[in-house]
Length: 117
Image 1 (tube, rainbow, N blue to C red):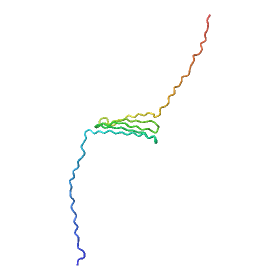
Image 2 (image 1 turned 180 degrees about the horizontal axis):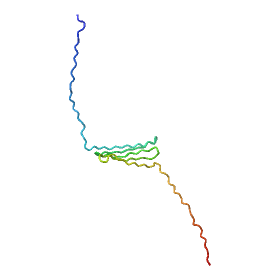
Image 3 (image 1 turned 60 degrees about the vertical axis):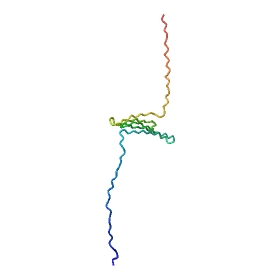
Image 4 (image 1 turned 180 degrees about the vertical axis):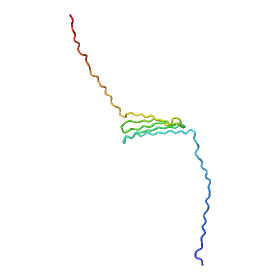
């Protein structure tokens, strides 16, 4: 007799599945606003940022303390016409004491009176 009979193997043909993907709606005037502020007295970390967008115009500012102890604040704007523009301000965190120096007191030299006879 036959000990083993041949086994026929059939593979199913791939089935094409139509999938509809719905894209998010286009927003012709996107808007957002955010900000944060970190003031850590333990580590000395001090930084903040605010930013907003209205249509194609983004504006904001951020600040941080540089290693030399000054606060750097950057104010920026970006739009399709002018591109990205930033203005940087630096200010010391510790106000330096202003000591008023006294001007030396100057006395007029004595004037000798000469009598004419």
